[in-house]
Length: 382
Picture 1 (cartoon, helix red, strand yellow):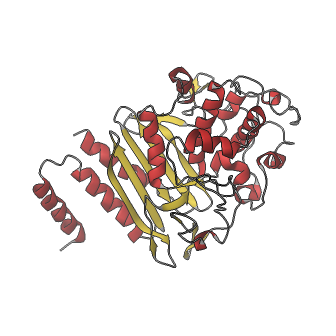
Picture 2 (tube, one colour):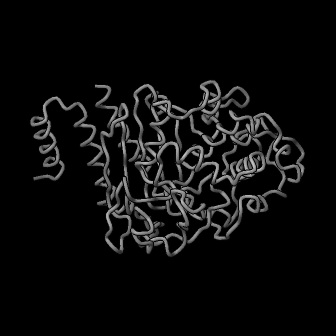
Picture 3 (cartoon, helix red, strand yellow):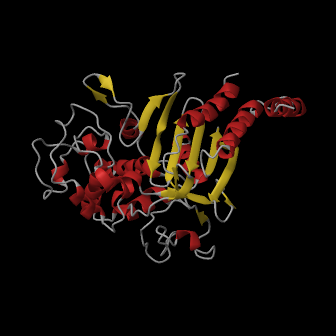
């Protein structure tokens, strides 16, 4: 029998057995599409978690966290690089700092780092957070640096370069904006950025498997003395780490190979965190459940798309704020980094949260992931 017809026959058979299960076709469609991505070597491993009304309606791993060891990827246990999904985490910490009066979104960046080289124009924390400050993008090999830089040392990479445009007049997405914000946050609070995020965001939300790769926390903290990056990450025993760090891959002509080693600590706020699919979904659900204790008016500033010359940037402050092809509004972020790719979307009206992590540098599967996500709406809307 034609494999597609066989598959559809099984789908309809399952539908008859489960009768009124309104999620079935969406779940089956997603399952099929994700299986096909692995079958055709589009990704080494994919971990997905989908929540509806606060409940897990779909959670599964496809492929491998480690190809050589044939270690299956697990959405609850496999720790992957979330790349720019780090920005909403950092933005949440920034919102707390604003609420506590430690930092002002409309204050000049130079208020917090007065020694930063002066530019032709001044710019604010808000402009950095919305990618409208005129800071440049990566050049050459900067995307994959493997140097143990502190956050403040990371500023040296680009601090002497001129602004690309007058702040507020254009939009240019760059993770360097969040290196600058995290440096300002440290100066404003007197607390290391990673410790502030751990205390204000990760611990309160129970994100126990979300890590700072190169951080060393104080003894007794959740991630005490764990250095989760470099060639040794896949050799950490379960007695040291509760869950497994995935192997990070890049796809070439001959297939998947291990990604280059990188040290992302200096850009932790913009793209340095590791997490599980389940933890990132939990993070999104916290906003729907109003477990993030940020005053709504302030939170709305972060979750409202900014305007440049009367046009939407489809980006708030550390959050992508947009709508999908069918006009459904969401906030979240797509992440792409060395050895990791992520989709994180929160749909408030539909009360849906999607968290998809892939342990590979840009696998070029966004169209397929969009179809996976859309499958759930086909059922919800029917």
